[in-house]
Image (cartoon, rainbow, N blue to C red; front, side, top):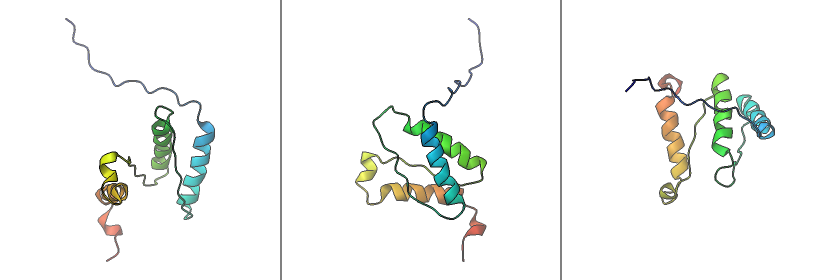
Length: 102
């Protein structure tokens, strides 16, 4: 029995959603310039929404932009503003306390 080190799975190339990524990248650039907006990404399971947003988050991080993510689950739907609470908790965990206004 040989002992081989475990390797991380190779991530596949990102294909087929360049137009959508470009549109989201424009929103990201506008937000970084101070003109934020809301974008809804929706579709049936398995269409690549998570991967698309993962690519955008990678781009955002490379630009020094804070990126938060959340999933609207059935369990959180019972709690008013559950997704917003999740996002704020993530932000507070990542935030530099010196940036807060006293």
